[in-house]
Amino acid sequence: MFNCLASLLACAADDERIVPLTFDWIKSHSESTGVSKVLSALLNSSPENSEIIDAAKSWSRNHIEEPGTSFLLSTLIKITPGDEDMRRMAIDWVNSHAETSAAGQLICSLVKAPSSDEESLTLAWTWIDNNGHRPFEQQQLLAAMLRAAPLERRVLERALSFLKGRELDKVPAYLFPALAEVAPSDPEVVSLLSRFIENGKVKEDALELTLNEWLGAPDPTYTAVHAVCRASETYAASGEKLSGVFARCCARNVGVILDAIRLGDARAEDLCYMIERGLPSIDVDPAALIQTYREWPKNGGYHIWKGVLQSKSFQPELFIGPLNEWLDENANTMRYRKVLCDLKLRTTIDPAFGFTLTDRVRRDVNSLEVSLPESRPRLRRKSRWLERRVLKKR
Image (cartoon, rainbow, N blue to C red):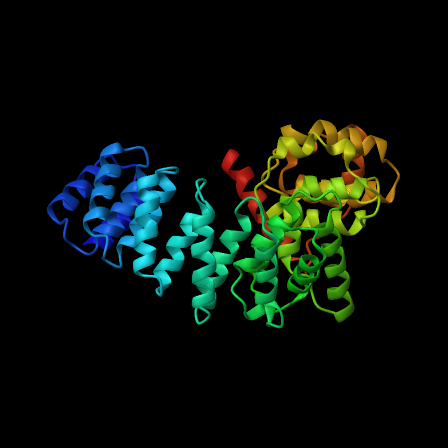
């Protein structure tokens, strides 16, 4: 029953009947082993409900010796930061269950808490030293310690030594995003992360999480952007296709990419092409991106326009003014002709869009013959989406 209630709270917490029903069940089944999970789900769905918080604290005190209590204590530490009583209770539980994997998970919560102190870090070091047979939990705890401010050099060195000599595609991706976030330009970290993103065997979700963290980390030298360029070269030299993860990450961090290009030492054409590939498959703030169009690089900026025209996130009214201005400024150039191909596709599927263009551009688009070859399934999918949208409006 408690699994059903926890699932209901996770999926339908907005239903006003769920929380009272669950709370009533807890009151009549307070000795059930599943109460810890249900209370934890209740706290996550109603973090400001003082009655639920008090019930969770009371249940934790009365069942402090039970293994399952650690799960509820972790949630309480997250929900009630700065509660010294909860912190003390969690430390006591860890001391009495020090050799368990649950203790490592609870120490993670203690380290992540705003009130984390030297005692929590000491517990973390002790648990890591005594649980070498639990590498997954060790990595999770080290990742939490890396993100604890201020960053200690010995934590960074321990994380790097843990990964040294391992096959990076077979290591759970807990440490890589944390290293990318806290030490984006450290030479050893850069070497490790570069090998990680260039490893074609790494799972895409781990690669995407790490690369997003690395690109988004504050770094005036834009180390991650240059690593992306090197990875592109590595894939090209080996004849392998560059993963779509790189395109999505570049599009999602388009501001960082454009800043790196403005410094003059990043390859504008390649990076803008990745943005073009990534824009149609992610959600971005269209207005914010279009406002920066005058800062787009001259060599490569047309790729961003191509991505805008292919993306369903960008409605014509958001970009048609800047686009017409750009087209006028770049008339009779190769950049202009390349964007015409995507304009032709858009106007073929949505004829009304053509009337938002200037007369000259509309004539050039009408004189262009563009087909959708079988080798370009992404464009065919895009054309079907546009066609359905136009028919729906009609």
